[in-house]
Amino acid sequence: MTARSDEGDVPTGAPWPEHERALEAGIDFDRANAARIYDYLLGGACNFAVDREQAAKILTQNPDMGYVCRANRDFLRRAVEWCLARGITQFLDLGSGVPTVGNIHEVALSHGADARVAYVDFEPVAVAHAREMIEGFEHVSVTRADMRHPEAVLDAPGVRDLIDTSRPAALLTVAVLHFVPDPELPSILARYREALAPGSVHVMTHGSADHDDPELAASTRAIQDGYRGSATEVVLRSRPQIHELLGGHDLVPPGMVDIVDWPEPTPGARPTGGYAAIATLP
Image (cartoon, rainbow, N blue to C red; front, top):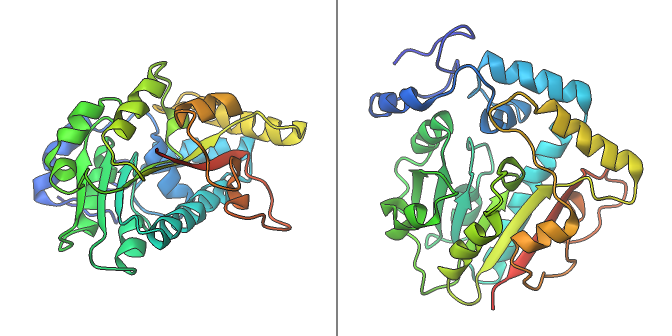
C-alpha cells in the first residue's frame, strides 16, 4: 500500500505491508488516538494530521507534554533493565503503542538472547508498525487485542505461546491506564497478575493530579483537558486509586514517586505529574 499524505489514511513514512491492509478497517481516521499522539510527541512518523492537531492542543495546554512522554520512555528502559538485573526476562506489555528507538525488545535482547517480549495493543497503526519492526525476532510477538479482555489477551497465540507462566514475568502498563476509564480496571489487572508466576512484577506509570504542589496538579489537569475530544481521553486517578490498580501489593523502593525519580531522585529534573511504581507479586 502506498503511503499517503496528511489528507489520506496512512501515515507518511509508516510501513504498511500487504498483510496488514485488513487492519485499516479498524482505524478511526476522524479522532486522534493516544498511541499516535504519543508517537508524534516522541518524533515518530506513524501519525495522522488529526493526531498532530490534537497534540498541538495538548502542548498549548501543557508545553511540557513532550518532556513527559520522553520521561515515560526513559522510565520504561530503566524498569526493563531493573527487571533483567533480577532475572526477569519475560515482558507482557499492554498498550505498547508505536515502537520507538530503545523499545523493550531492543533493551531486553541486548542483555540476553533468552528474553521474551509480548506486545499488545488495539490501535491498528501501532500494531502494523510493530509487526514490521519485530520481523525476524523469534521471541518477540505483537498481538492486536483489547487489554480490557484479559482472557482473550492471555489466550492469544502471541502471548500464550511465548510467555511461560511457570516463570516470573513483568506485566507492563506504562502510560496506558490513564486512557482506560473502565470501572472494572482493578479486577481486569488482577486477572493478568493471577496468570503470572510468583516473583513476577507489575510495572506502571499513571498520570495524576494528586500532588501537594498545586501548580503540578494544575499542569496535569491541563494535559487531561488537552486530550478532550480525542478517541482516548485521560482519566486522572489519585495515589490510593493507582495503588489499587497495583492490587495493593508491596512496592519496591522507592515506592510510588514521580516518573523522573524512579528508582532514585534526579536532582534538578522537572516533575512530570505522573507516578511510577513497580509492585512485586507474592
